[in-house]
Length: 360
Image 1 (cartoon, rainbow, N blue to C red):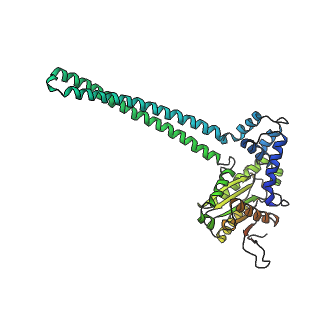
Image 2: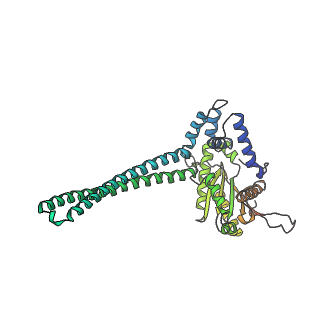
Image 3: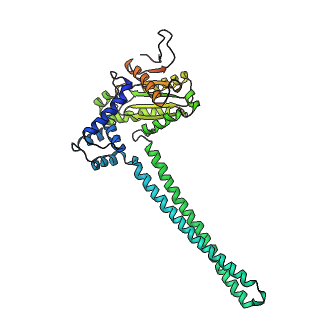
């Protein structure tokens, strides 16, 4: 949960430091899958995982950590999936190569028969009716065999092609799973980082692109009052609201516990502010409660911060400035939108300006 007393620029670094320090204290190897476990546990994004991690020995073994990783992130075991696909592809390609070698041998033999037949027919004085009938029989059998082999080859190669297509589909499915948040089915932080980096690979996206960061207000209190399962359902509901309240030129992701991000490809600052305000209002106007008991969970709101890509020098800088704007919304009373601008403020003449789009 984001606390108003913590400077936004330092939060990510502080979390990284805490993760690295904790892993070192426990003697955990710095493997990517281990970082994933400790990130989810220490940020509070996965309470069940955190409890399981605490229940391990004081110095957890790699096998214990791998069991946790398989339990909670089984779909993300990319290396295993890729290695299995690589082995399957290699096997299919070897089969195809073997089939083609066999077919080449068959065609070479057929060519030899044709050559021998042609040589035998070169001297018509030695060719009798009986010899011609034998030649016709041999050629008929050889041709029929070659045609059958060709037909079988086509069928087999078709099957192998389908098998390779199945492997490709599995890899595509893995890619989708690896980039999808399991709770909300939105894109996850991994996919978000890649999408954010792509902005600065295209001058047009830098000119017209933007980032909106959103955070559920008082989410820790929601979990404390109603329990984590309810908190998860609220996260899912807000994810659905954000997804349906945006248009086709937007990229929506869940970047952490109660945090979301929206990347917009082409919009001016006023349009971005309007989109962010629409998202804020959509959440604020939605009644959240237990459908079975009718009990309400009280008003649920989000705070948002926006920044144009042209106001930042890199993906990291864009995220930092949007996060700073989000922090301004948090300390300014929550349930509001703040836009970061690099333009000087008319009054103070400072290097950065803040435009608050919602006040309570």
